[in-house]
Length: 465
Ligand SMILES: Nc1ncnc2c1ncn2[C@@H]1O[C@H](COP(=O)(O)OP(=O)(O)OP(=O)(O)O)[C@@H](O)[C@H]1O
Ligand SMILES: [Mg+2]
Image (cartoon, rainbow, N blue to C red; front, side, top):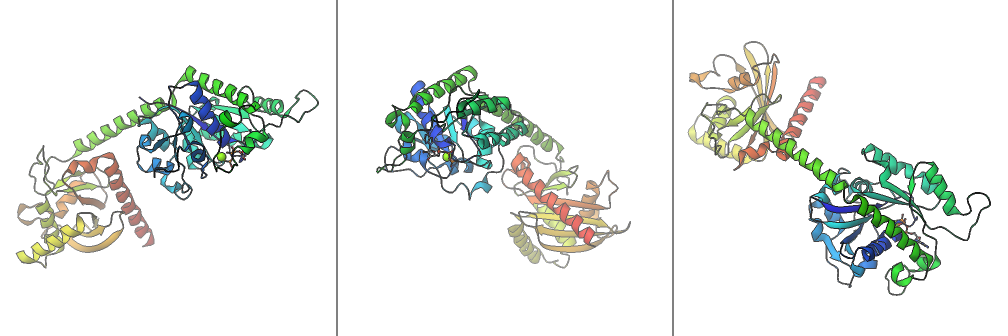
């Protein structure tokens, strides 16, 4: 079960103190919970995290972008200063955002990893796909607000959470960069009190206290060493030090109270999904015809013929395997009758085998009248795009029912058994050493994408006619 508690620092408003808060909070939390791993990373394209935590100049090649390309998160982590673990930042996140398709990816990746402890995520001032992932995965979202516009921007964050069926209460606001020299007349004496009142009035939860604007804190990121210093070491005599200590306590108490719950939910969903996928796989296997779709030889239970062809019609009510030789016989006899010599046929079979073992074959039948059918044979690429094709006209009697053999038409008849449609498609693909793997979720999705594409193309062709 996952054991990480994720704290995301987010605000669509730039310059409100997200990164300063994320980096410093990591250190204060580590101070409170020495034995708990604290890991920090940023989905922004600057290197503040690295500049604050890198132990020496030599850096490894791991970076945060690799989280979404299959790397194990624990392998990306570097041990940093102040006992904080971090993942190095990346400048190429923006260009690579197309690699991240949905908001639930990060949560699933971490839920399946062995990462432990507190994870703090700094985000960019946009609701891009990385921020959405960080929000989706979060047990707690801390939103720094420094003025009325940044408070208004919280709406988009709550809208996103609601859309993901998450509770708004995981969001907690924190007034930041508060200029304590400014005083107002009236019930709210300073901008902290005013912001907090606005926030509560709009139904948001807030942390106790705030983070003051401090020239000392601001200066910590500019120094001849090119480092960024934390408040705990270089700003200990500021109010911000006390404020961060107070904030870290509240964040830690929240963690103690609820513990890591979000990733457990995600892990349970993943488990249910896998259960469903495995059920779907089993029902696809169950639906397979027990014999070769051409010659009626029983399909061996333990080991389906090597290089067999898998075939399915568009409704999925016919699906099964054809032995390799049967399939070529079917094609040669009906589509290449001009090749009668054994040598020629062998050559063609070799050429076809080379061409089809990575592509799809589409057989398409259109009934012209009761007696005649047109059958098209297309070779498709991996995406379902037609590469080449051939068409033949077949008569019901005559060429098909040769000497009791099951010909193409019989195959189509089997596929149309309970249908009145005069049009039929069969998609065929050569299998590899483990033919049933084609029916596994991931491969079967690809298969269906190709089938869908073929059907859309066919509909477009029809409309065009
Ligand atoms: N408490 C503070 N007192 C004074 N200056 C601060 C304080 N916190 C942050 N700053 C300064 O304010 C600026 C913005 O802070 P920071 O980079 O943390 O904000 P951000 O929300 O992460 O910005 P962005 O949205 O651009 O990522 C920085 O120059 C930082 O040094
Ligand atoms: Mg930032």
